[in-house]
Image (cartoon, rainbow, N blue to C red; front, side, top):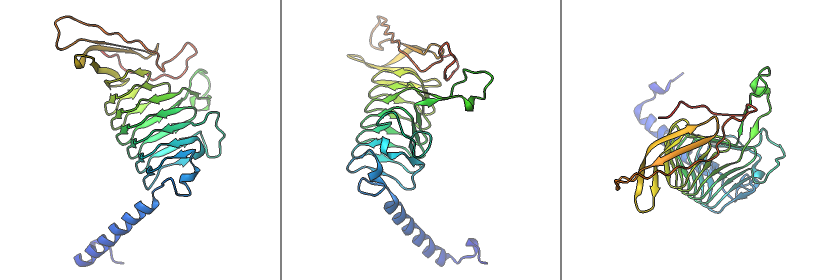
Length: 264
């Protein structure tokens, strides 16, 4: 049997060109658009939008809505519920706005409500979910305990870097940049830059001052509160702007939480 290494160079060039051409056809014809049979399964699938080939796991499309001119990259999993055929209690479960780009290999796993706005871009391998496991019963395996849901929203114009994880209850404001590898739990205000595990604000836009680095940030995942303080780089007078908001932490009953290291 002839191995690829034994193929003559001229034949390798012909084979490589044929494979490249064939793959181009496959990726273009295999993509899902609003007029395709599978595209019509969605609750909404806007004009000019596309799910690139090959897709990841996609099921219960009826409860998923996609806006116009949105691109969902290859190998992206887009699901509503735990299994195909499940009847959902909310509609839509997942809503993606107009002109949004979801990077390849990402997961959008909805069970209750995930709202992704317009003009959002994500890097590859982003994970967004509105459901988490609980560990309320210390004697029962965590995987057998009933999970809890909390709505997730991502404001229009935001950017999520590679490998960002967005957990239940997260509320990301408008025009927010989230650094690669960050874990978002709780709320991030409009027009800020956030990084870390859990994500904290390191820069925020202040009217009249522009983008201002925060002097320090503190995130307490046990009470679900994030505090940021900003100081103008253009003023000798200190200005503290404390923003306290609810997060998706742990409550007195031991519900889901993502713990992170203390942030100084």
